Image (cartoon, rainbow, N blue to C red; front, side, top):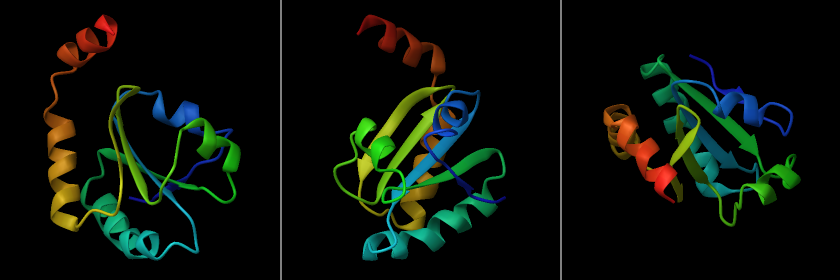
Length: 118
């Protein structure tokens, strides 16, 4: 599975569909981002049922600002168009796999109820 590069034109349509989308916010000058990249790419190969995407924060500053990115790398997980995880910092491979399992196991009816209650 390949990793999709997102821009302001493709971000919303990518995250709003059904299924799981993981978004890695990064920049080429960021050391932790460069360390996380091969972990993210390996997970993409191991989870073909998940969409893996990256946003270059330098090339997409307006999108990064709109998303509230304050630190990179930041990882976001969307499921069925709902943001279910948002955390700055690089994850080790085992933690990323655990996160994917947790997102897959979510009861989306309960998540939707929680979102509606807010």
